[in-house]
Image (cartoon, rainbow, N blue to C red; front, side):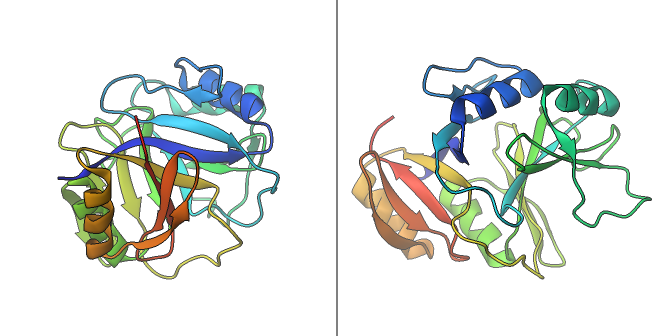
Length: 230
């Protein structure tokens, strides 16, 4: 038994506005509750949820957008026209990826064509995460996704069916500045309590419950949600 990654919860000051931005950049249908639906059955939804806390510091997760379906500069220009801005995270002049921030300051990267790591990936090529090697192993077991990279304490996993990769960069880790604004949302394949127990056995910690999910944390302390229903 394993859990399925059904969505990425994305805290937003103005969920509808942020959903329009990402829908315009990535394409896809947005629902009335500010959820951007996946383009195919190997993707995941992006659920923009209201938060009164503005972003501070770097996010623990950011999107690496591939240039497999449209040229890098075309994606950059479209993002800027929709309200993104160029963003400095200390990247070097010789680096060929472009770092941007969405209208609420959430950073993301546009990777040039020819990148081997993102070859064959959709527009969201990867969820690039701040995290340890151990947390990469945890999520590989939690989702039953094989490791596709495991070198120098950097790890990455991908669904056997394709879709985006999830990667963890290893140490040094960024300083935490409050609750993660982007959080995984899982749906159990079987009995929910049995899945909670399994995740805890793998190294998760139970945090609590809210109206639609059980909240847990992975071994690095990143909160995630196990939904009570589809």
